[in-house]
Figure 1 (cartoon, rainbow, N blue to C red):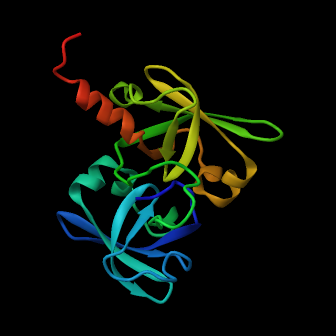
Figure 2: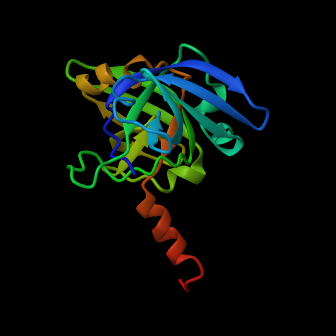
Length: 198
């Protein structure tokens, strides 16, 4: 489990195609500072298992389902990624409950900068927008954010300068693809309501 509070920007330094999966090696000095094989690290919102740690890099295997559902399907050497180690049970929950189970992707549809914050809007598949609520939580590339506006095909968030500086969201441009994880509570409520009389 994660909180969506990004600890550092890492970088993909190697990509190996394994036919039905991909092996990534990622540079992340903070993420690897106490990492061991079997640990979970959020890579731009995707929960991945550490296979090996060498110096300031860790290696992880990404299965076909994850490659198809997330932006990691287009992973390439030199691409920056947001990194967060798994949450500790004895620390504050600064963001919201994030599983690292990406629900799908969205496309940056607009960027509106102002003096103190920047608003990013995203085009999203309607099957995911039903789980998004105004002032609710959403995870974009592993970053816990508050939804400003939402409709059937889009949503927006406002980013403070710190978020723009310490995460990859500050470098996003219109047309970029981002990973989305909706609030897990909304999915469970829908599941519980299925089959009930209306």
